[in-house]
Amino acid sequence: MSKLLLNLRHVGNDEYHDVCTLLDQHRIAWYRTEPSPWGISNGGLWIRDDDDLARARDVMGAYQRERSVRMRAEREQALQDGSAETFSGLLQRRPGFVALVLLGMVGAAALVLLPFMLLRG
Image (cartoon, rainbow, N blue to C red):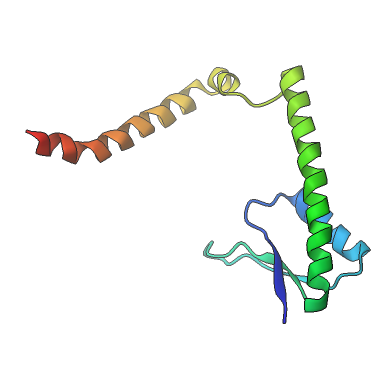
């Protein structure tokens, strides 16, 4: 019976292609389920044979450890050279967007607190 190896929710194309390549290199039979049209499921990568599942998880674990180190190093480099996305950079580039988001947050907080304020009296 097939087992889910990777839910594709929040998985970038680069990571998806890396994992597919790794599975192919290790000769692990897999298939992909497509996302649902209504957004209920984002699809996934499934291992066809239960006997390959442990090996696939080992390969996936090693890949995720390596990717984590690489992504953290890239983030640190981006922070050092000033190309990383920061709040102040976003505020300078899109002040209207930031103001609307903050206004929405204040509005949501006000709606949540409104019943307590009305019942306090």
